[in-house]
Length: 136
Image (cartoon, rainbow, N blue to C red; front, side):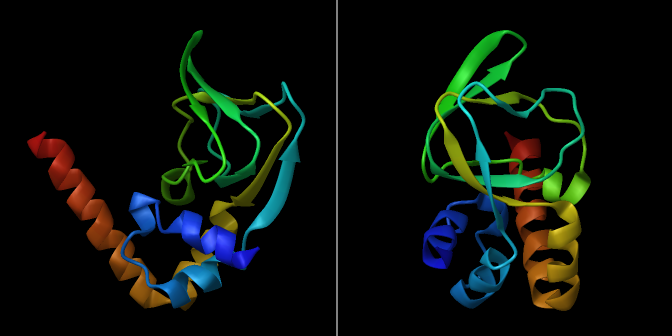
């Protein structure tokens, strides 16, 4: 289970600077969550409750009433909510029965506090994303 999560976490831009050992420690904090087909996982405009990695199944991403994407195994959403806990920019609905691994901000923060090298890596990654957004 942890290796599946570690491989998926490697594809998350926010976490891209973390090494395998750090990702393995983080993966241990994840909890399995399941959602029945048709269930709302997150709602656009609601406060972010965390980050999810999809293990099995598919989910639809909608903004307003427009479907924007379909997510499947290995995809993720909500990574910025780990830090700012702001409102969701899209709704995620289970298109099929969905099995995810979830991490809440209150589980993520102690991990970062206990591993200060992770905090520095996250700051560098956020700074790079900010520069890229400003120059784009």
